[in-house]
Length: 95
Image 1 (tube, rainbow, N blue to C red):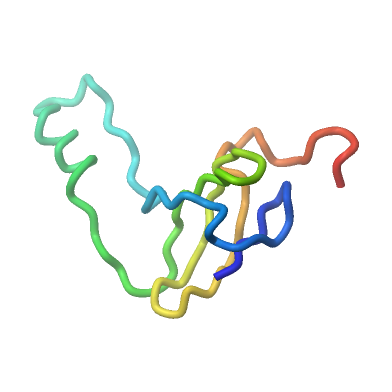
Image 2: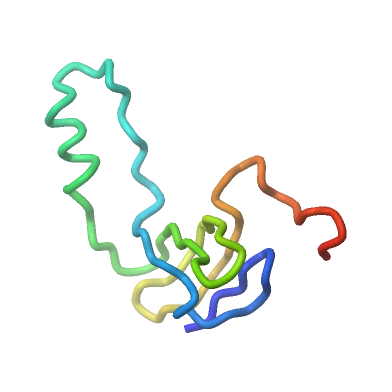
């Protein structure tokens, strides 16, 4: 599988570390029943078949977190973007 990093270009997936599903939102510590809410956030995950937003870390490249839209059935990469919302462009001098 090849992933096109917005900073480094197309690379083998072996250069990346997979973190998992990018869709869960960290609960607030002020939430009532916070222990079970955090337990669900950390341990209870679906295993969907089809398009899924995932987090990947480019360990052998730019060391940036990426949000990768991948079809879990075919491993087709549908989209790649920086995970941080404010990290939308490349540094100066890089195009």
